[in-house]
Every structure is written in structure tokens, then in C-alpha cells.
Image 1 (cartoon, helix red, strand yellow):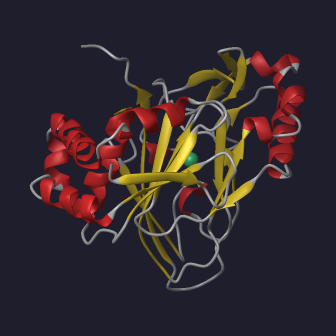
Image 2 (tube, protein in one colour):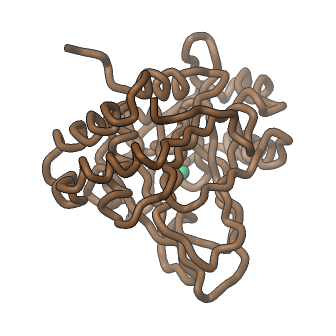
Length: 298
Ligand SMILES: [Fe+2]
């Protein structure tokens, strides 16, 4: 077995997985012909990348990470490789191998691909908080405005320099003091309209309830920017919910060094981002993938 699983130093619910240097080097050799472009053009090669990782890392790696991301008590993990990577192709192949050990990413309409890489810099002219460095990116779930299921999200730090602050902020629903209050509220199960701004390239309105149940446990669907309540009462409910989450003692900052990735269950984990400290040279490149759990079929 070429990996180890430990308690995450920043969060009691997360695990941190380290893949050793020999296995990392072997993976890089195996995926040398799987460029970013080939993985984009040929979907089955993404599963071949996952197969290489499983064969090289060995043990029950795939079973282990699948169990972690589905487990309500945990629902997430980070992964690092000893020695890191040298090229963007290697990083994309690694993130793709991990995501495809779990499921299949949804088509990302913002980029027209199965993943998105986006930059955060000193200046930004976009139409959502995603790339705005100097303001708090409030806690939310992903995939609120799409029709597809978004069971999990993967974020990988591809590059970074001159960045202080901007850490991920995470909240597990079961660490939120007010979960019971908001999840049992009469508006919790009311379908609300979600619609994204033009940059997402997804000109569709969908209806989602703020809370729903899986295995008898409350799950959440929420992002402040894309939900369109229709009454003052609904607006107050969403404002109070967001304010309560932001003030929760359960919110934890997660430090994600370059080449590390984090996978979270999107049904009961919320994520956001701290503001960065002002720096004209600020640069971060993040890859995201989000998708559904594979139904096991032969
Ligand atoms: Fe997000």
C-alpha cells in the first residue's frame, strides 16, 4: 500500500491522505500520454487515469475514499502527493483520477468541459463572487442552479503566489448550531427558483428546496447569489439562514497548499472562501470538478 490516511490537522471530520513519492512518480509516468487535451476530448481516458491511480496506489484506495465521501460523520478528505507535480497536465490527470474513482463530473457550462480552472487575481470584472478576491465568499453548496445531481465537489490548488488569506471556509451541517431550527422551518421544504448569471452559460431556471432528507438526515441546497425568493418572509428566512451559518462556531478554515485537493460531500458540507489580503500580484489557480456518485453497474 502506497498511501496513508490520517486525521486532518485543520478539521476533526476530515481525513488527510498522502500518496508516497514512489507511487506519485509511477503515476506521473503512467499518465505521461494523458494530456489535458486528450482527457478533454476522450471521456473514457479519464477512467483510465483513475485505473492507473488505483493500480499504483494499491490497497483499497478507491473503496476507502468512496466510503469517506459518503459517510455522514466525515464526508470529505484532502489528498497530497509527496514531491508534488511539475506540469498542469499531471495535475489535471491526478485530479481527474481521484474524481473518477468516485463518480462522473457534470459538464461544466462555464468552461464547456468536465472541469473548470479559474483564476483569482487582484482585479476582476466578472459577475459573481467566484473570482472576487477581496470579499468574503459566503458559505454555499455547489450545483444549486443545475438540473444534474451534484453529490460531490473536488477542488485542487493548481498554482498560487503572493496570496495571503483566501483560505477555504467549511461547515458540516451537523456542526451548525441552528440546523434543527432552519431545517424544520415551514419554508425549508418550499421550492425556490435558482438561476445563475450569464458567465455560467446556463440560462435555465430550476426549483430546489433549501433542505431535503437523505437516509433520514437533513441535507442542504443554498447559495445566496443565485436564489430568487418571492416574498419578504422567504427573503428573511434565507438572510437569517446565511447569517447564522456565517456566525457558526462550526466554521473552520482549511489551508490547501498547491497540488493538494479536497473532496467534499455536497449534500451536507457548505464551503466558502475568506477574503485575501490586498496584493497587486495575487494569483491563484484552482481546478474544480463536481458530479454525481457512480451507480455501480457491471
Ligand atoms: Fe462553490
